[in-house]
Image 1: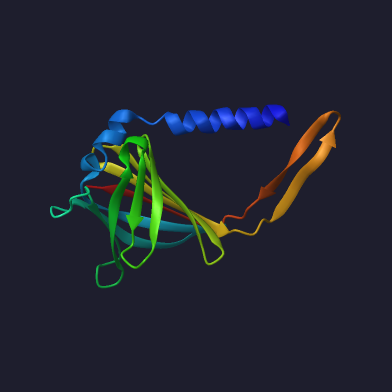
Image 2 (image 1 turned 180 degrees about the vertical axis):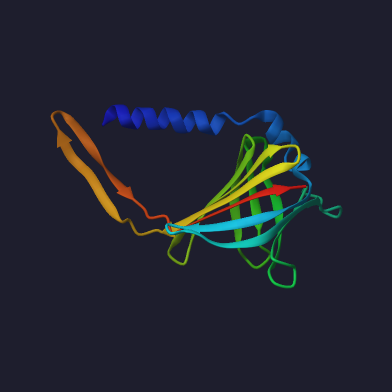
Length: 181
C-alpha cells in the first residue's frame, strides 16, 4: 500500500511539473485560428452520430488580461453556438479557465500539447481534451459517464499489504473529432 501511494505521489508530481514550457508559453497564440472537422459520437454499441464541429480561437483585441475566444459550434451557429472565452489564470503553470459567459467558469489545464477540463454536471463526470497534434491539426475528445461507481473492489489485506479500495466508473459516451485549420 505504501509503495502504491509513493508511486502515485511521484507520478502526480512529475505530471504537474512536466509541462512543455514552449507549449505553455505559446498557448493559445499558436492555437489561434478556425478549426473544423466531424465530431463522431460513440456508445458501447458503436458510432451513434456524426455532426460537423468548429472551434474558433482568436485573441480578443480589447482584452487587457489576454483573453481569447474559444467558440464551439456544433452543426451551424444557428443550431448550436457556444461563444466561450479562454481566460489566463496562471499560464506559466498551465492554468486557464473556460468562461461559458453564463456564470459557468471551469478551470482547464495545459499539459504539453493538451488542454484538459474535467468536471461533473447533473450526475455525469466529463473529461474534455483538446490536443494540438500538428501545426494544422487538433484532436478534440470527450469522455462522459455517471459519477456513480459501477463496482468497488479491493479494501482488503493480502499478507502484510493493505489493498486500497478501487472504484470503477462507467463510460457512457465517447466523442472524437480531428479538427483542421
